[in-house]
Length: 253
Image 1: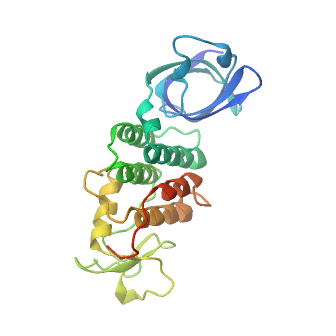
Image 2: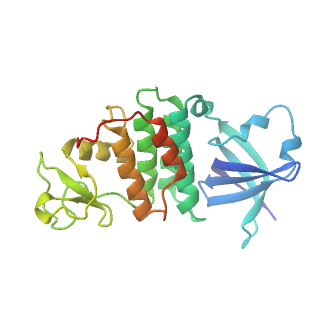
């Protein structure tokens, strides 16, 4: 059984037995891969800390088809991303990205998803405290977009008419975008104005350099959209992130 080497990001790990650990990676070449790292907890010295969540590197694994748990040969860490653990908002954002990938990804490779994951974690590692909420939102939106799900922001999801520059509509989660005022607002979700629409569009592109107004409202929209279209229930990590964000008035931006 020849080993396979691919770039990978470690998303989650837990101990197994007295000396081993089960690791879950998203890889560039094989999608989501679960491995058994035998005896890894007995190793000491250089390289021991490289198996930390959100680390990237070269994973070498013995792969058997039709097996859910593969055997790891080696992991050479190239980026540890220790900075993510220095701030709770950054950590919560990274955890949400990992939880989303683990919940929806499969064993098919996706370069778009791998790139969105890597770049989102890279941004979270170095972002300052002021922009950390925006970086967390952007990272999750980018992964959602890489899965093929993005909200319709420029035109009404019912009549397809362009939304006015100053128009305030409502987010229709079931339909996947904004419903204009002319199509009726009964049964739709939260009010959303042009500033929020523009901010979501930037976040989908991974841009968070501008201040994100009302981060809790943005988080609620993101969480509900992901629940409707990507996973079947709210992500626990997004609830954790919400508890870290400052409270705010419920005013449509």
